[in-house]
Image (cartoon, rainbow, N blue to C red; front, top):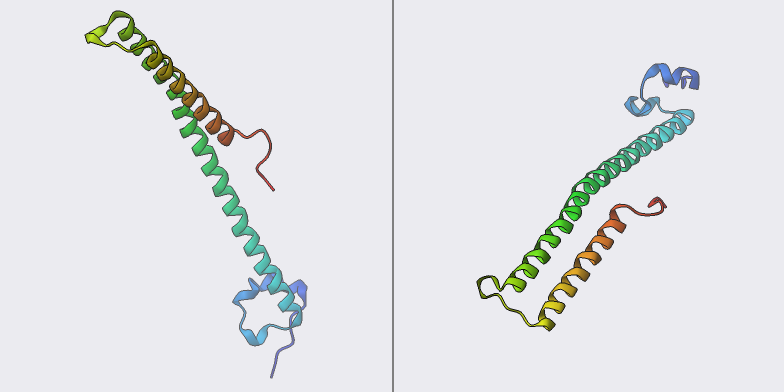
Length: 129
């Protein structure tokens, strides 16, 4: 016949409820099974959250280094263009309007990229919702 369902105090001693045969699961065990499944889902969500945090830290390191390397590269570019224009290096000649446009637009682009990436990687508030 059917064995009586063990009291909830014995549930912990019997191992995971999900490992029990179906005929052994009664009303109290069904509630405990539901709780066990909820804990498993919570564990998976916690693992997913932790993986997201690890990815954020990695991206902050990588893109932080890349964006800060862009600044010196831009300064070298500006220095080379100004030097080449000033000394007419290898017949490098640009009109004043082209020089202003080149340096102005590259400066605006570098500053804009820096602001966008920095605001994404290092938000002021919490991203948690």
